[in-house]
Length: 248
Ligand SMILES: Cc1cc2nc3c(=O)[nH]c(=O)nc-3n(C[C@H](O)[C@H](O)[C@H](O)COP(=O)(O)OP(=O)(O)OC[C@H]3O[C@@H](n4cnc5c(N)ncnc54)[C@H](O)[C@@H]3O)c2cc1C
Ligand SMILES: NC(=O)c1ccc[n+]([C@@H]2O[C@H](COP(=O)([O-])OP(=O)(O)OC[C@H]3O[C@@H](n4cnc5c(N)ncnc54)[C@H](OP(=O)(O)O)[C@@H]3O)[C@@H](O)[C@H]2O)c1
Image (tube, rainbow, N blue to C red; front, side, top):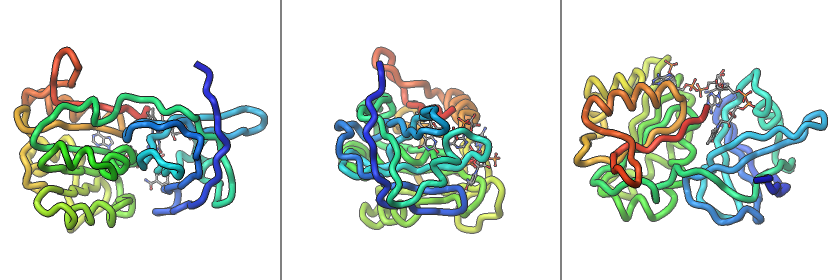
């Protein structure tokens, strides 16, 4: 189906660190969507319209957030990174994707596991009522290369205060010493028991739903670990515990 584009103004650009940023766009024509879905962002470069999918890092509204990392040799992200407040870009009017809580089974615990910008759909979900109404305890696991890549920390830590005893934030770095979080890749941390220990929450087939988003190697490795513990992909006709979004 042909994409309908809406020209949208950037109202804010927040730079978390060089090359890692969130843009807020004024996009009143985007049709209502569900938290976790993605839109296309596009720009014209030398007469070519270049566009890519991006999870919306906010629920539906007139202003929408996108959390983006610059891929130096990429086609679109160098153009997006160069934009500033007051510039405009194309946003698709209609969202797509099945990575939503509507498609996630009920459980006691909801694990939201991301690497890098895979955090974006969870920020959108956590800003809605749904996860808080459906799950007793929510754990956000964010795996990044460096401590500086841990964006949205203030917002995430605030959930712990807003929902005492119901929220755990588990930051993990792979390339830095890290005194206040975990160190290592997410699947290994799960295998050795550190994830559950740090979050003070169990992750089993009987008590948890787990969403995975970001680097496809992490998704594959983590799914393998989860399968070893008796968990499987959730499908409407064959219920399981795992819901996955691949970024590339
Ligand atoms: C459903 C969906 C949602 C997405 N949501 C986001 C999002 O919220 N934020 C975001 O930054 N990207 C997101 N992406 C990735 C995005 O669509 C682009 O692929 C990315 O921005 C690179 O575009 P590019 O043209 O600069 O690079 P390309 O020329 O397309 O190069 C792609 C290469 O860059 C690497 N890469 C791509 N995306 C990432 C990433 N996010 N983190 C680390 N390495 C990456 C991979 O090695 C990939 O092969 C999403 C992708 C999908 C399929
Ligand atoms: N992040 C930034 O601030 C930033 C800024 C500017 C440009 N960039 C560019 O963005 C690209 C990468 O971005 P990124 O660091 O956000 O994403 P990434 O390469 O996907 O890395 C994110 C995290 O995923 C981990 N990971 C990789 N494979 C895994 C696996 N099999 N299991 C579990 N975890 C795994 C990485 O660990 P390892 O460290 O062990 O690989 C890292 O901790 C690069 O091109 C980089 O140059 C990044």
